[in-house]
Length: 379
Image 1 (cartoon, rainbow, N blue to C red):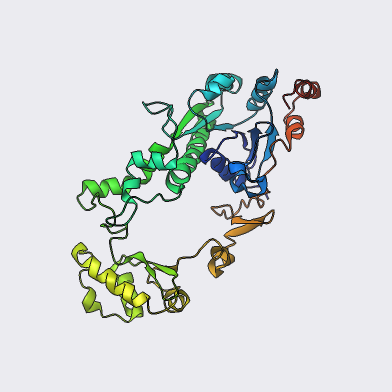
Image 2: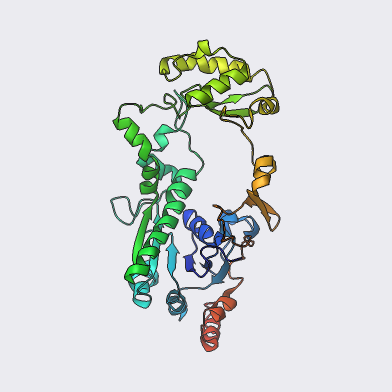
């Protein structure tokens, strides 16, 4: 079945990190996304395309933009697109002849999505960087880690994906909604520093109110509190506890066989260290699976900490179809779910250039121009 974005046409200038993930989100929900690859390009991190999960669900056109007629051919595709996504440093697309001015001249209603770490403007705009740098500048990284220890990089979830790709996806769809009313496209400047800061909105409010401290591991949600942390079990595996509210905290204590009188005033930070030690002592007496029997499915706000082999097999994830097999690779299924517009299952990532001539034909490029591009070595 067509997904909710069926009929949407997107050009993705292939790069690294969040821009491809944004394109995957759009493709997962039914958009037709065409990847513009470089001829001979290797897959992400040099791996075979099969394992480049964020590249799933779209066709690939490989074209050498330095060759005669190549830029004009891409602009012909842009003239039919609703959205273009690129993730290069500021100025790169302009030097290629595919900057916003050139593209909007061909398609005035185009939404031109730009994904960078530092943004299109500002003193750091042209500097190299990665997720860890962007979330450091936003204030997010300093908050992640345990008391007395260095900040811990949370993989590249916060900058690349949460503060980057998802911000860009929201931005281009918001701009597209506006374009449907105004008839005019625009540029979406999505920066990972901005997005990581935005993800921290609640904490900036709590800090201003005086109920959140700058230190790591000393607050309610950063492993400071006994009721919001992970605990090691007898088998060396871990469980996660998030019993914040009084009724959930009470149920946790009851199921653990602990006296509620020992845990009065649960929001008092001065009492957290001793209570964490007590819970650690209790959880260490049984295996993780034993604790699942006692706590899973209750209102104690409990979950086992699963690894990437275990998570796809958990009964809840199986029941929801949270993971799928695409080309022999187990991976997260598209999300969120829609009650009516169920997109087809994603297809395996394409080899760069796998669909070059097919895409050009399907998008109406004249056969003689395709032949000329081939003769020029552009495709």
